[in-house]
Amino acid sequence: MADYKKVIEEIEDSLRDRESLKKNIWEWHKKHVLGVGLPELEIAFESGEGVRVRDFEGKEYLDFMGQTLNVFVGHHHKKVIEAAIQQMEKLSFCTMLAANEPKSKLAKLINGITAEPLKMLYTVSGGSEANESAMKLARRARYKVGAYKFISRLGAYHGATFGACAATGLVMSKPAWIEPLPTGFVHVPLPYCYRCSFGKKYPDCEIECAKIIEQYIIQEGPEVYAGVIMEPILSAKGVVVPPEEYVKMVRDICTRYGIILIFDEIVSGFGRTGKMFAYEHFDVVPDIMTLGKGMSSGYAAIAGMMVTEELGKLGYAPNYHGFTMSGYPLANAIAYANIKAIIEENLVENCAEAGEYFMGQLKELEKDFEVIGDVRGKGLLVSIEIVRDKKSKIPDFEVAQKITDFCKEKGFLFHFNARGDTVNLLFTPPLCVSKEDIDQGVTVLKQALSRFS
Ligand code: PMP
Image 1 (cartoon, rainbow, N blue to C red):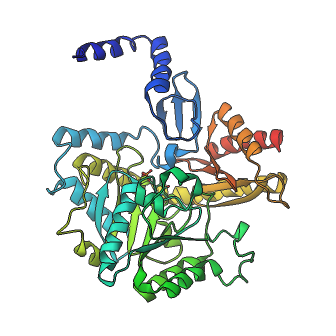
Image 2 (image 1 turned 180 degrees about the vertical axis):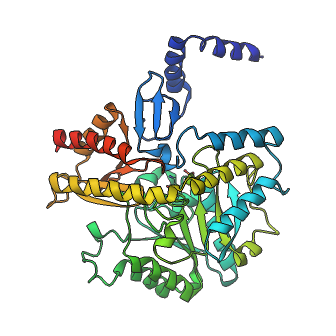
Image 3 (image 1 turned 135 degrees about the vertical axis):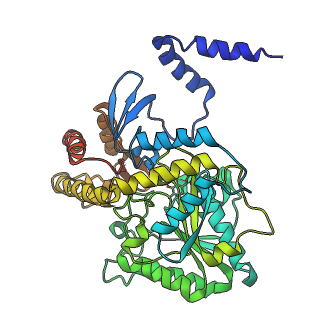
């Protein structure tokens, strides 16, 4: 039998001095950590404060990634940390079959900040699970008519588990070896005006990209479709902000045919777009809204969904759909403290203001640099599409990579989103970012653009 205590002793011994700590982080990471498949940053983070993170070499970075688009209140938020400690002192965990104070408080709080029909909260540990739960509930609700299919969009990301992956329309997340995925998913073109799939121009297009959803439903019969799943503002392929009518049209189509409308607000929920939820930009409310990232700013693994009373009462019983970590007190207390901080520190308002300022700066750069094909965004969900030149719109992966690498070297981090047919730089800083932080980032970006464009 292995000497388990010796394993621990050896680990702790080899981390005692700073040099071996740094060396072993990399060595163990390379040998024993299975990555997600994307190229890694080649940074080992040690600490963070607000919009800045620091690596083990002491180098500081301006975090316009918000890590995985999820650090909303900023790093090292004292009140969120304090709430976590307080809850751990009382009760870290209890079964999903019991009520607990943080779970009830969080449900009441989210109910208080969402639109009227959304009443009941279901919590899980990640966004993919949230979307699985939403689609299972939509199938449950539409089972009586025999409906099982979903419509989602090409280029959208909804998660890495099998069902969420089937809903995903982003081809790079669906390699051939993953098949067979669950069947019954139809993918329609995005409201992506910069590269319209129908070759049309807004507003003369009559929002063809929304109409096609109805065409599918009519052609196959509404009794075939359980739901439509979409982000009101898409984040995975550069930010895609649809024309206002689009979201309303999709809502109307779903209502007309009794189909469940699921908004994936895992990225956009809790203020990222300058409103508490992205649906507010369009004055449209879904039947189910999935939530994640900004729900805890990464202080706990928690995601969830808000559903209408009708769907909530229907629920999953007498069958079982639950997760060990559904509704456990620690994560719920952290989410509560995080959302409270978003509200008390006026981070949604700051996001709207800072986002507008940031977009303004990027629009200025767009005028000067040929490689910026398009600047799109809402609030602090902002992207720039990198092209060879404005006329050809040919994606320039190499230049986008060089800009990203240069900025990282200078301590400015953001997402490099190469998607096969397009490439975007995506910026999702914590919502507490200041104009000075934005100026600092834009200065570095401008240097990169001047060098590589
Ligand atoms: N939906 C969207 C829009 C996402 O961006 C993500 C994650 N990036 C997910 C779902 C899946 O969330 P998770 O990675 O927490 O499973």
